[in-house]
Length: 387
Image (tube, rainbow, N blue to C red; front, side):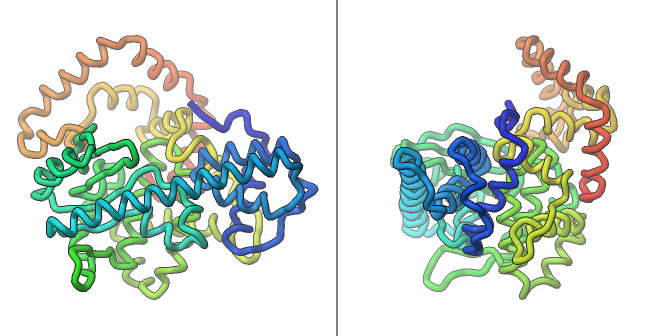
């Protein structure tokens, strides 16, 4: 479901202005341009994009709201701050457990990037992501179960645990797909790009690798689910500034992975929106970024896959008969027993035919995808270096 289809066309640009105000402290928003109806629309969009706290804080700073509207904004902002603080406290408990067990670990994504925002609560993070060695997972699973966590999924790159207060992903490799083939080898070398902390089991990614990994992760979502959300643009824009001291090493990684064009275009897009001199952003990127909620858009996903597979029929065929490199991450057993591949394909086909309505709807969406929109998406992905 695309969450933003009912949002007025001017709301995304209003949101980017509010984000810029939160990041830079600028006063570029005219209070008279923001009605109460627009305020609620922009909060709805911001929540789906993972930047609700920034929008609420900037809206409150306009000091123009009736008591009921101001209460709404303050309560919303308080909920975001409370969520962030609770997640941080739970994350510290997990890190303390890892330290106690002597488990080497690397914090990923949210914790690292949130530190670049004016306040950590301004960046919403759904999960806590931590990299550990694969040999540690069995013991950690037992300990987490004792702490009230439930193991909900096991994939080819992580184990996902949930408790009443936290969603935790323990990664043993960084990415569980072949969506960015050029990045796979570098991502597998992650431990070579970490720096140990003194008197701790914790390791931190180098600046260059942190930027590269973030770019690869966002690119994967661009191709896999048809969107990335404006939060990802802010993330990469802030990281680009932080890691300029490692620009040469960073660029070498991007070149090797085929992500140089993607990184360049997305950072230029961020600079257009959030830089000191604001100017009109690329309209095609603007549409794709705001196509749906954070990291997801039904329509965008279909358009992107049809564009990448060079046609609707080829995409349908790939759904029915996915290549080994796609399935090995979904079914980790294939990484050790490749001969099971045809049996996994048959198993998936049988699952498909037990839910004919679902696959029929998906194939209908593919067959009815607008050809002009597919062509535009293909052009954009090509410009981003993602084809």
